[in-house]
Length: 154
Image (spheres, rainbow, N blue to C red):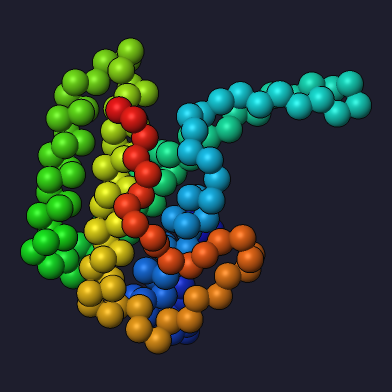
């Protein structure tokens, strides 16, 4: 997603941008959410160490970006939900120390999941994605939300 850009000759629709962000968030969501860690692999007796990113932080950033794009279109309910979530995040940040940083990330991640869900309700309510066709490249994912998202213990 970060490597793409639009030229002046290409037609661009805000729905395309929203769909691109939704697709990226769902792609991030397909992987287990876990903290950054080191991964050591050995090939032909040569060990290599790689740092695997904290995909919770990737998810948070993607939802924040989608929220920024859609914020001019928020209804009162979504606007209120976002403000409450941002206040809760700020409270968690103020309590954060190096020892509690993991707890802060978990809190922010769970709150961003709530915001993402609220954004999806907004898109549904506004019929924002009408006429958009969902094409899934893999058969292992359903293209719908069911019930409340599972929230990690805080």
